[in-house]
Image (cartoon, rainbow, N blue to C red; front, side):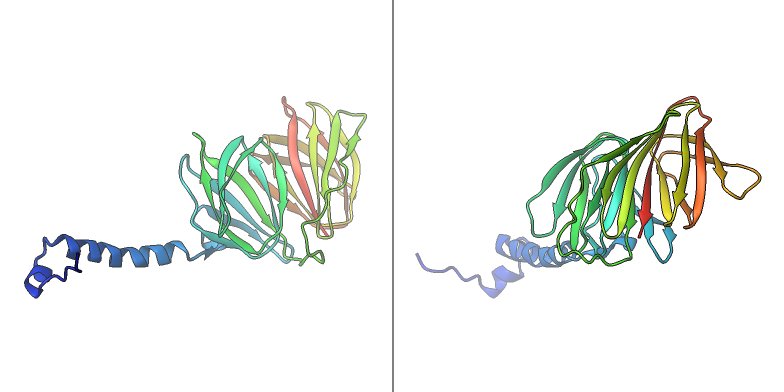
Length: 247
């Protein structure tokens, strides 16, 4: 059977199926081109820049249930702290999708240099705090995490080292109601990310009056280096937070 070539009359007919198919095919090209263009992470609508200093950029992230982020680029290494349990499809550009379930307060370190889409497969918002590391890592591969070092205090406090690499050290800290973390020396600047409601009394060496730290889950506070403090949980529930130190 020979090739059927439409006449000029047929091609000018707006109801010609071949013309309609060709127009739909042409219209699809710009859509595909846009879908493959990654935006910088600070231009992704679900990523809200909340802190920018010489050590880090911190984004508070929220993706509604059964919705997705735009394809966005992570040029820097970063870590994230998940607020609330979540189920995510992680679509890294040019790689197969990966389905991931997170626990409340889970923290992970990620090497940068990729673009991805995060799809929320759950019935509640996917919330996390994404923390970029501005210092360039000397390691060419993802840093190996050492065995977790747990420091159990005698006053109702527990600190669990999650990782310690050449740019950051992260600890999962929990304090029982009425409990405290003994005096801690902070030689490095650090970020405190609340996993639960925090109602902490912070006694800082050299200050006459203690300060109160009151944060909601997903809130954070920044502290400079060279301080020494002791924390007491004045709330009625266990306090949990992630501390990220920047080297």
